[in-house]
Image (cartoon, rainbow, N blue to C red; front, side):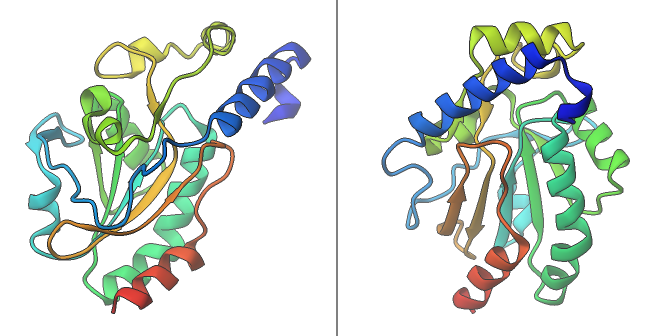
Length: 203
């Protein structure tokens, strides 16, 4: 991707990435033993849905991603579809992906990556905020993103700039976080092997 961006844009994004890594996640963010909030979300067609309904009293893997416009997110979700979902299906563990984007963005994400798992919208980052995993791009980064044709205010359901840090949670049958992996550096993601190891430990 860097090969297609102007040097100035790369400079701005790199500086913002370093800032986010330096800031990190809040102490105690998405901690094991914390109940996962279950507010009303929107499915890819704009219908109200809750994680509890999608889980149906089962453990679940919950993935927070930034949006359909994020190339790193699309790569990760496609990898999870290909490599993680088949293993989770054997254990009857659903995968649920959450972003703050509008439902049509969720639909685009699901269709573009041929995803078979639930892709839902959390307007206003209700869950990510409660878990302490919300961040926001710098003003310079927002300006460059807009110059590249991506308007976060238009993409996000609440018209804001806040985004979740890429995060994977393993939630038990009671909706309590059993394991979490937070990535303040949005260019990195949780590996499939790490998620499956966490699932194995819960068994």
